[in-house]
Image 1: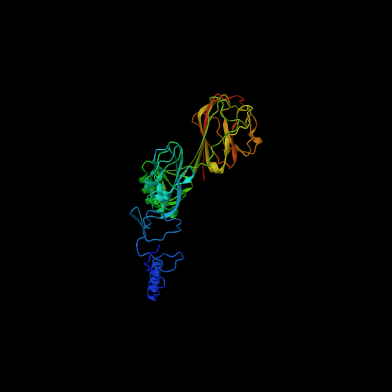
Image 2: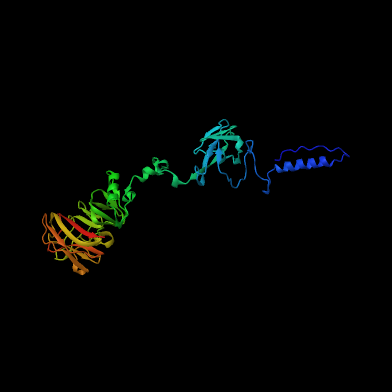
Length: 417
């Protein structure tokens, strides 16, 4: 608003050019003290602008070198606002309560929008302090109160991880910080390891191992140049190659590995055992089969497949390059001497998965892997490599057509990825 100019009254019939000019000059001075709508000059404030506790509405952008909120100076360096989200609180009025606790502090009142029974509430009807909302008059009984609070998001890249909270979100989860969550696992790359096969990563790997304490250290896939030997507890999910030096142990965790699954003609019967284990450790794959022969039967003719009588395919499992690697060697150890069926048991591989008990292994596309001779406790027989995608079969080489009442074998297959 312009300041009210002082205008002299000109009496009827009184003609004074001087007085008229003075009045026009006063009017011009008053308009010169007005902010223009179209931005024409003069259009600048030379004193503080007092809104008398009223709001500035529909502002598109406020461009200022500094800003004070509730008397506190807020500079551009102190606030880096990138976006905001809305927090919502819902209450039910009881006709007497004026004070409500919000789930998020709005910082200033202008960050809030309040609706009572769907009707927007003017900001002069309430105040905020921290996360406390106070109405000047209690909302009516059973009224629906909705409070929307703008949550300002700052650039998290400038925030300390120790001051940012994290909650898993599941029932019973406990709040922690992003820093504590990230420090649950230690990686060699946290300490500068490169894994390119050229940079010496010895110091970085040693530092990671020292920082982890008793916990295992994660080594991402790569080639790591090591000087000497690094001793510690390490694990990986990918292919890790240690160049020049060595790391005493790296456990390879690979969820893609599938355990061997036997055919129905070899799966355990009552009181028998069939267990398998496939372990990948620093690109070396060890596949182990522990087998109790009890309940299985030999066919009575040399070269017949051993399995459950009349129960279907009697393979021990399928060897694949993806799960078991490229096979370099295999051994079969007798832990308990076979009783009842043939004691002369060989190990074969075959392309087909159709071999059943009491049929000749020669009916399949087969290869003899181990020729063990008659087994007794402690016998260890070693054999050839196994081609990929082959099924393993136990084959009797005697003439006993009977069920086994005892006999335990340990088969160990070594391969690499």
